[in-house]
Length: 223
Image 1 (cartoon, one colour):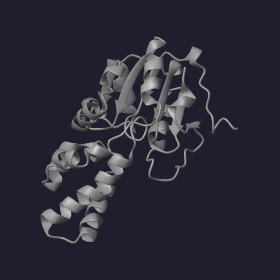
Image 2 (cartoon, helix red, strand yellow):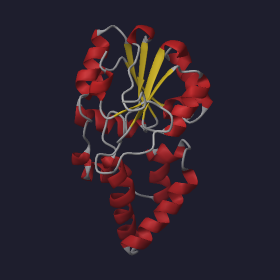
Image 3 (cartoon, one colour):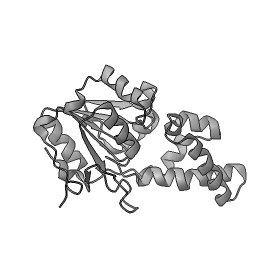
């Protein structure tokens, strides 16, 4: 097998573990279903449109904000769409699920004495909902949302501000993330160990992970 198929981290060179949430620790199926199916349906109902027209209109609005902090903001979309986003999320919250071997991985990393930080673009309201559903909160040393830092992970400002509140040595840090733009941003910042996720959404095919080493599940990264 190639390195791209089975990345082996040199744990002796790592002190800090930065982890994405949606698509990395948690199944992206919830988010994809919510934003692409459930919310467009509710949006169409609220405006007396056909489901197809509602979805088409929302997709265009999403596209215009992609990669920005607003794209990830519950507050932004609640205002822009005049809808109760969190109430609608609760309607499909049963789809929130943890990827295989995640709890065991988090426990093993913390037991090894390394610092474990959830670094997510998700809005704090979404983080609260998902942590309540999964019970993962005690397994992190810190949980940081890009909204608290005023910059998305795709921006260099995110990593600069993260380092101010959560000091880490980029050369001795690993980031696991399912987003290529985020991994690219982290690489530019200097984070030395970068790992992608092959299948963020268990209901969809594997995605392109570029030149980054990628995992099928977290059993492949155990320290």
